[in-house]
Image (cartoon, rainbow, N blue to C red; front, side, top):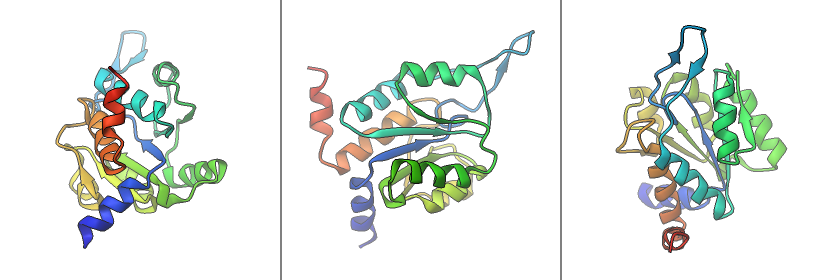
Length: 175
């Protein structure tokens, strides 16, 4: 029974909400001698996001940190919903749902650490990266086999599209 409910929840997702550090990256923060921050993003995650968007679904990024590097990556991936500096993520999550006129049951959250728990509990489908902290993995309906920053977002997109019976269509986008 729980498996069917989980599959149904995954199939109804329209918005994929991602944390950034530890989800889209491996969680490392690189600073150069001038204090300029850089991040390493996984190209497969970018492909997954592009597939998700090409099939008509939305992506949002909600992160507690702020920086230009994320804005550059979001622009590359055509992600319009980018919320930075969100120390209390739940407030921003609820505001985003209001703005998009979207019920929380239609939202999946992919997370890795304690600041994400509040929005995981609000979302219709909570997910965690393989190397997430124990409390986040315990709160998740789906846990990736790959760690954050190493293809976990791509894995989640495949998981959601298979639940929607749209994975073959996604593969067809590439020939």
